[in-house]
Structure formats: structure tokens, C-alpha cells
Length: 105
Image 1 (cartoon, rainbow, N blue to C red):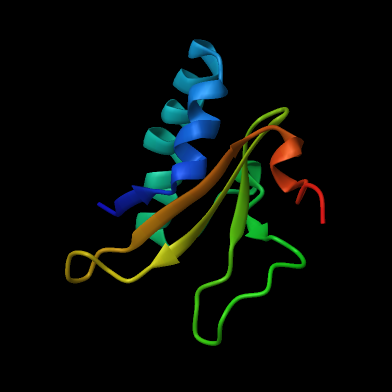
Image 2 (image 1 turned 180 degrees about the vertical axis):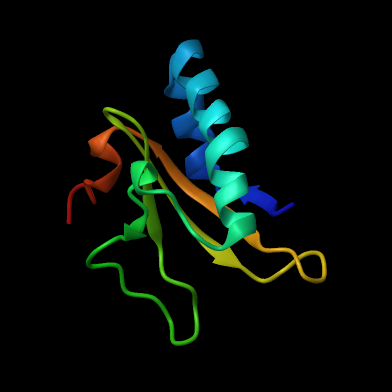
């Protein structure tokens, strides 16, 4: 089973979700995302793909996005493993399409 961590921004985003949205996100992670990470293949319904325009230091895993509801998106990336042989996921943002808005320059 993969290990997880969250950024402070993810925690703030998650608190802004309604209780129903929080439960839907957690259900998607438990029943779709975790099994897909374990299998190494994501189902089409999660629409997992790299986030465009994110610049990262060399060697860092790309930031990915996934869909968990009609207007539910989350960004994440793989991190350094915490347990041998198990993937590690860093949750970065969660919410609607607004999570892709970089904000003021």
C-alpha cells in the first residue's frame, strides 16, 4: 500500500471542501487511486496526466493531476519512498478547477 503525505496547501484546500466532497475524495482514493497505484496503471476515469507548465528541479517527479468528481481535481506527485518497495504520494492541492490558477504574478 502506498504511503502518503500532504502539503500545508492541500490541508487548507481539503478543509474548504464540503463534508460530502471530502468523503467523495477519500472514497475515490481508497477505491480507485490506491488500487491503481498498486497496479501501476490508472483507470481512464481518473484522467491522470501531468500538470502543464510546472517547472521542477532536475530529477524531481512531475506534478500530476487527477479527477475525483465532475469539478473535483487533485494534484500530486510521487516522492521518495518511505517503505521499501512501496510508492509514496505527496498530495499538493485539492478542489475544483481553481486549484490550477497560479494567482497574481
